[in-house]
Image 1 (spheres, rainbow, N blue to C red):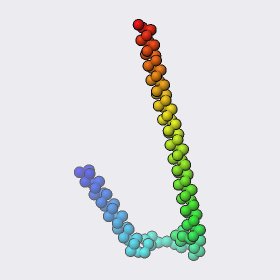
Image 2 (image 1 turned 45 degrees about the vertical axis):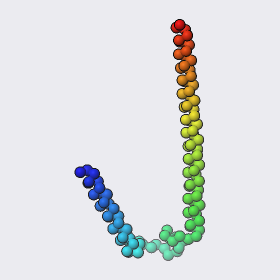
Image 3 (image 1 turned 180 degrees about the vertical axis):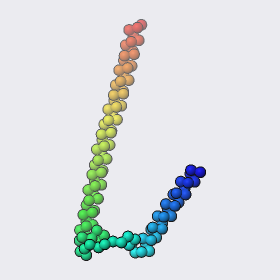
Image 4 (image 1 turned 120 degrees about the vertical axis):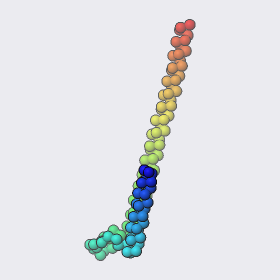
Amino acid sequence: MRRFVILVIIIIVLLVGGGLTSMLISSGGQVLPVLQQVSAPDASPTDVLPWKANQFFLLIAFVLFNLVGIAVTLAAIFLLLDWGLKRGKADAEAAGETDSNANAASSS
């Protein structure tokens, strides 16, 4: 019963979203009233001028480049931490075997 209720809710949300999308398309993109404050294209948030597009492209490229740098840095840190943990475990196991061999030899 619970799954059915969740399914009905998901279908209702999809139908409402489809209805809103069709309203947006049929009204020419003006679902909500928009007050135009200025008529200069440089001040418009919806008109894309060439210099705005260039700045947006540069911003996206800068952000993606930095995200790749962050990912490489984190990968290097995690690799070194993993390497240190494996080395520490191997040293601890080797020390444990040496101690058990020394204890066995001294008790004999």
